[in-house]
Figure (cartoon, rainbow, N blue to C red):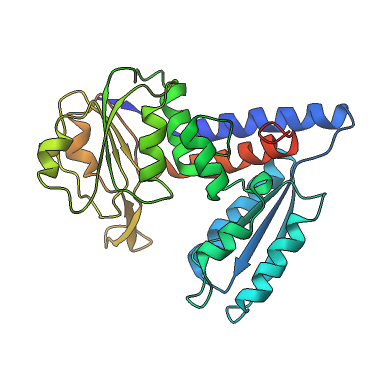
Length: 294
């Protein structure tokens, strides 16, 4: 059996470490980290995600502020809310939950967020700093993956890493992080996507395969080299009459058949997912302690 890379367990360890640091900050009379989240509209998944982030803040002793706005809010008003938070010295980190309504430009909103408070790591300033290898807030999911590789002592130097998926949130930053002169890193990286020719053949050359394509069970055993490390970023809800809930969660990787060939693999759920919030909390702690932007 492969090593099961347990994101749930690792995320709890990280939260415990962050909570301990918050207690030290309190004892030193320092400022408690404060995260603000902006939620636009009533999307069920977005409400769940934001609720989990607020709950996680409570868990580690952070202060949190949730700003709820109607689906019909104007772009101008949302930008004004973001600027108010930018200017509020008591707030260290700011996230605007995606997706946004179609009448609002994600690009404009992202650009409005002050880089010093951009704990999601989406602003051009932080993406650029990450690319250059400078101190930066790294997007939460890629950072979570890097931390899993580190904490499971997975060798990356000189390995061939294939990333499937080129999104700005996961695939593209992941390819940069794995190529950097760092640990985890120093890989030879191939970034692939839905239009890549001979994708199965390329995937089979990977020592480390990171799958963030957004297609349920896309990666099958015939696409995986014996002994590869497989990181599954996907999460999909599919009908399952055998479950009490009527559904089950699956990833971008066909877990049961790929696990037989892999040396290590992340499950879905309980793999990469829990690490995302832990990473967001870590970035907020860095922001509060002015570790990235002194």
